[in-house]
Length: 311
Image (cartoon, rainbow, N blue to C red; front, side, top):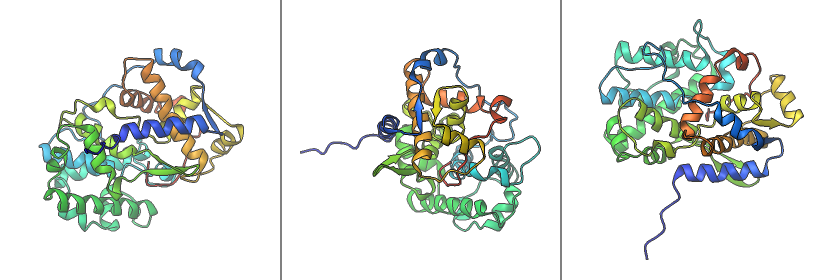
């Protein structure tokens, strides 16, 4: 008897987030505004070609390495107020710009280089204090990437991408098994998968032209803290006054706490509801909301912050 195949990763994320949204106590989705809000959404425009946070030139190996390495350290939003930011750039853009300059100036990190990367070296690349806790976490994530690519894909990032056989879902599944991309929480005794960065890496590999994934639209929203913030400001997410007060006071939320899980899960489920009301996919809506979050209206208000390695 043939065993039933495991439910694909995005389906597991969708189902778990829908369940959390139904059980949530501190966050709820105002479903009455979904259709009107959906009409105002447009797919996000790609960043300008000269964006300091994107690498547009290079062969497949270089572009694959860039996408995977950058998304392996695409976390730390709870630490952004404490890092050294470049003039005019956000915390994420500051880190991304450092990686871009490394790839342009010295070439891509190889798997062997990543295996031995240390905080002091990485801090110099990113323009940060080597003693900052985030730098050690970044280094640990990149070492895991190096070890995995070297041991499982012969040191080749393109071999890693090609192992997904043209599927964004398959690449996200593969990355989700690595420590560098781990991202699950426990809510009411149930494991809730998010895998924000594993899915984002698959989308970024496709966006970079390293692969063409026909199933990219099957990915979910990339659960972080900015999309919930935008949806809250725009009235799609309604928060318990106590939680809203804590966020506006700048209090850090505990990663994995019920309210932090609810914020992420309700945002993912809200994006699914918006996708059902538009012709846009969940990843396209996520990009539109993420870019919208850069506007002054959203930057002027405190967003939920949590220090973790998920986002």
